[in-house]
Length: 288
Image (cartoon, helix red, strand yellow):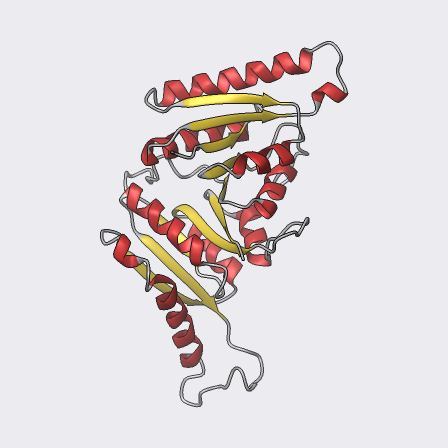
């Protein structure tokens, strides 16, 4: 059974960008596309106009998919539910959830919509939030060069599933994978962070390199054609990843999920890239 890509649509410009990205992604992976419009209009409208408008949005999005790639199998459904709850439920049987960065009716100036943030912070599977406008749907730069997939190598226990996801994306796109680990030297000498007399940075760089090696050790054999670049960079992780997002096709970050936790589960770095990245961001949870 091929799990579909699920896209949240609401008629906004941002959600239409998500439809375009997801159409290209479905074609790359050979999976169907499922469009979902969710709203609680029935609580507030008695004349059915909300349902008719939802049907129109869904039909327009489906036609947009067919025009962009007629070979992609597409279906859709209008659900009288809270958008976050509906998408989280749909995501349990999806290859990934795809959303725009802001929905219809969001306040102007918002960097990330409330639905996208809540879904990214609670979903049990991968969520891709479509940000930025400098990357073509096929992952190429304006000059035709294929952009790399960037993987933010997080702490142990957060990046295993994200590594698999990033390698698979690089393989289907035929592009490089750039694995990035940022590090910072401590302000003071501690037992956990001894400073090395001749080169204070050496120990931190070495630990960062070993972490990348550990992430890749068991998975590279499955993707022998993917060229992997390892980048160990001094600096704040969020700043390093935001800089890399300017020239990336996709930025992939992993998060740790705790079961039976009702709130948002996003670290500071993931929260920052979701709000400020210049390319689509994939949040891939690592479940206990």
